[in-house]
Image (cartoon, rainbow, N blue to C red; front, side, top):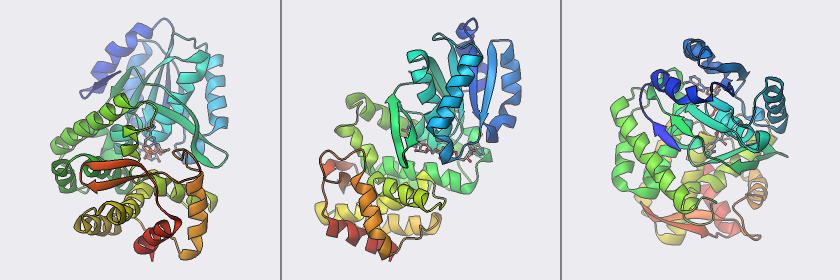
Length: 345
Ligand SMILES: NC(=O)c1ccc[n+]([C@@H]2O[C@H](COP(=O)([O-])OP(=O)(O)OC[C@H]3O[C@@H](n4cnc5c(N)ncnc54)[C@H](O)[C@@H]3O)[C@@H](O)[C@H]2O)c1
């Protein structure tokens, strides 16, 4: 897998041309289609056979949409040597990557992430998949794209909340890896982004994810550092989905990290001032999730279904300090409820 951080239109031509004879198939988020019209038109000569536009909402990451994509590929004559180009945020790269990895037992694919979330996280690390039976990312495969093309100018059209989603994962990289990276990440002003600083941080975040995914591809030990904040986050997302409340992954992660820092203080004496800093930051920049004490039992039940659990216990990544993480940690039900109380009541 290779990552390119330069002009994507110029580079994509070189990358995709070897697939000309077997066909290039573009899966694109309809929200960014206009931005890519010229690029797609200029690539028709290079072998783009067909374009599939999707509406990127969480319910699109479904088995029905995957079936529709497999049918489209079959109908349009794709074969195992074809190339699938996924253009969009995490919904598009997760779904498009899953479809590419399973069609004819696996085709090559390229990701062009268009959200900050997909640049720093979703398009990297080989996890692809769909939601199933009301559970997030319940079905999927590990598969790496051949190329990832990152162009930070693509985030210019993102609304503030979507930038904040990706930024939550950037804060996570700082918290799990080093205080200098965390400090520089807090320095980013999402209303007025310093692109040079952002590009440098994205590169460092990607290196961290690639390193952890390399030493622990199947997410059993060290890679679980990346799950920091996510045990609570996935439960919040499941709760929101069951109540038809809109909640993005990044916002859930932001609040989930505060809860898991609270557990880190209890278990590992993580510095309280960093917990308070993150809590104030999240309160200021992220929409509150409407959670009251009557929701705690349901959140706890969703946590018990988390894929990271090995036996019947709920699994967390907790921090001893910035950059010092412990994977596969347990916490009692009382501690989990206490964290929810601290953060939401
Ligand atoms: N595979 C992984 O390792 C991994 C990691 C993190 C998140 N994810 C998944 O990624 C998804 C979230 O990703 P996301 O936040 O990128 O969401 P997304 O794909 O839904 O994009 C967010 C919104 O922004 C719009 N959009 C995309 N690019 C845009 C642009 N350049 N300008 C304007 N609007 C644009 C989309 O249409 C959508 O409405 C979740 O399903 C999550 O589970 C996967």
